[in-house]
Image (cartoon, rainbow, N blue to C red; front, side, top):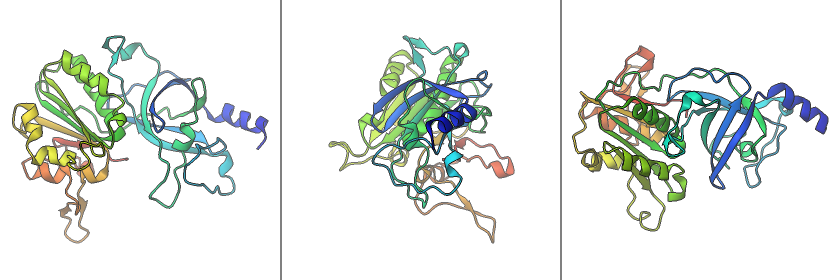
Length: 309
């Protein structure tokens, strides 16, 4: 394609600008995007989509991609939860005064699926001031709607699954939520915790908040890995909460690796819920009296999880 054709496609297809780009390291970034339209009303925990044209270059070292005829003028799109930096200039972020949205994105170099990753190899070549597509509609049922004042709220995530939890945590702190708050995030390396300093500062400011960062490949953890499931079965989560996991007044939010979450499937013959072979958090907690959301029958429980991952 000619530079003129590419410029025309960008003008036609893109509706947002990269306002700020912060790299935690080469494969992890925090992206602030300012749409051309008014920032849509939404609730913490919801998501929208970002996109870049297939005509854009891809990051070196990523899985090779073969385009089909007509792909060169299309957008590569993916859903992302809206994140939140929580603190700004030493205080809780005043989101009502912002005109941008924040996203927490990891570079996917290779895909386990048949199709190679299309979007992140392109997103990671963006610079501040560059243009991209952002879907105007923001949606999702992964919200704080079921949480009552004084409830204990536990956020459990892997990797960039922390993004919606950060936004929901900001909302609870902004409200002056009085119940215990705990967030745990499991990553490979400490450098993969881009918001670690923010959470450490929050713990200094809010005595009822606890952050548990877990790493699995650092020198001191690679031979004694602790995963999210282990926090529960080993009792550390309750110890750090200083109270038992009580289904009557606790809400648990899950986002990240599907194996960590462990969403039950429905048996085709009996209709019974069947847990995955690899034991996930939902199975562990439901055996302790919790109940996961079941959107298909409009059942709202006290375990809430993001589905689109």
